[in-house]
Length: 246
Image (cartoon, rainbow, N blue to C red; front, side):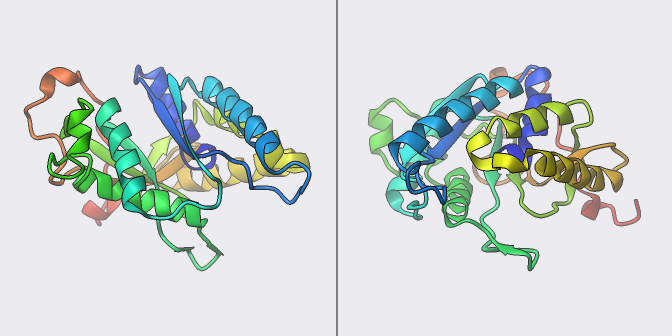
């Protein structure tokens, strides 16, 4: 999350948004250290994620507890994410890009692919439609059709840029909270993040930016019936593809 959208999350929190972050896995397997992997690593990742969330102004961190590296697209995962979607009723929903390969550079993590695709599908079906997982109705979780925009976050460059010039330092600070992952390469990662964010911002006229694919319409999106739920939500930056002459 910190690589893809931490600067934007910090900006939105500063603007008054209540930000909830769902961590799908327990972080227990992502290491080459055989003595560290397992419950000990999961506890460390939990502390690191909370520290990063505090830096960014996240209101709540939700742990779903799936085993790191073992996530697959299943109906059960779809129901888990739909449950959170209905409970927290987001106006802006940020999800991982489920693309299998990224710009001919590397393979996207299988957990990221499964969670990303499931999250996208929840906005179309299980999170928004009463007939999908009706047992959620028994839990008091009504379908949520007040979504305003869906942000698909990296890796890779996306068409819509968000100015994070005022929050780049917190993005980096949040990343460096994950010491078990950045290891001794903190300086190199900081340099890379600054370079990448500057390149992303240059095309949009920002000092630093994060980029997203933004979807703002569809069957599960705001239909005008839930205006009382939110005030003036900042609109998504324009997609330059909609105006080729600009």
